[in-house]
Amino acid sequence: MLSSARVYSGVRQELQKFRNRTEAPARFSSRERNQLEAFVIQVLEAGEDDLPVSWTGKRSGHNAVVVPIAMPGEISTNCRRAAITVIDSNGQALNGQYQFCKNDQGRWQYQSD
Image 1 (tube, rainbow, N blue to C red):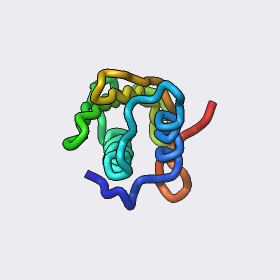
Image 2: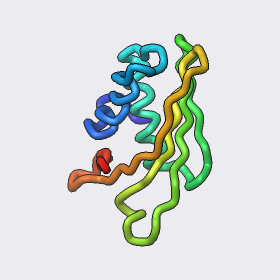
Image 3: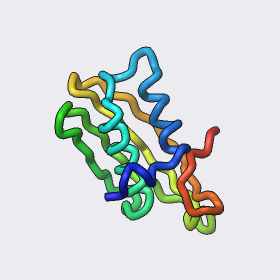
C-alpha cells in the first residue's frame, strides 16, 4: 500500500467533502482518513475497471468501496473515474463518482466538475 506521505492534495480535498457534509458519516480519525486516501490512490493506480475494491478501518469499522470506471481512449492513460462509497460504522453512506487525473509530476489530483 502507498504510504500516507504519497497522498496527494486533490484526493485529500475530495475526501474532505465527506467529512464536512452535515449528513456525513461518523468522523474518521486522521489516521483512518490517511489510510483511506492511500487506498483510493492504490486503486486509481492498479485497480481493474468496474471491479469493486473494499477497505475497512480496523479500529472503527468504517468501510469504503472504490470502483474504477473505464474511460475512453487517450484520456484513460492519465485520468480515471472512480465511484467511491464511504460507509460509517452505523451504516450511513455517502457516495459519488469522481474524476482524478495525474499532474505533470505523476500525482493524482481530483478534477472538479
